[in-house]
Image (tube, rainbow, N blue to C red):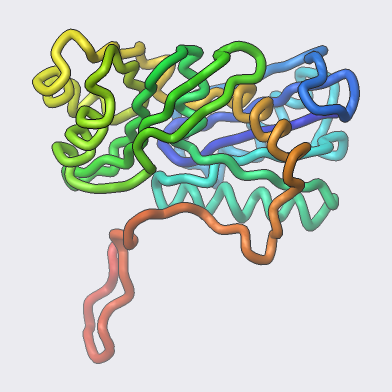
Length: 250
């Protein structure tokens, strides 16, 4: 069973795959690979070539994929739209099933840490996408329990919500929101805040594949007719009002 995975919620591209011995739930892994790098010029130009390359390095191709796991957001509008259109295109062309996983939950799972893990993504405009999960069994097949639901809002409010829900011990923080808001987090949690390095600021494709595969075994694939990204807020670029000569900016 070959499971490929990718996430396009941030400005870093994440692609990878795992190979299991059979189609049973939690089967042992016999191979894996992943690639992470900033997207230049963008996801539209890099996603498919990188996915093909990382599969080719393992001696397989898109036609060999048995399941595709993707990050469903929240994150950048453009990145998520490209990720979803690519996944649906592959699924329609080859018949491969698709399973989605929250990009914030994928960040928490990729931390390889037990206990509370706060996942925050820089949403710009002074806002954060954020959530907090209790991670258990951070080995091959980790499990999560939501402590703070994924939401978007002013950075100080998101940080405060996570802080209020995790006052009983250290909290591991991951994601691109650490860069601009580390001082604000430290001001609220002091030594209770544990920051992981930048290598953990984007989700791991292999962790996404593992968890997505387990959930696919339990509940089946997504319905492509209704499967949609988790945006959480309105887009920055909007169509002009009727009668306006203003051209929306991308």
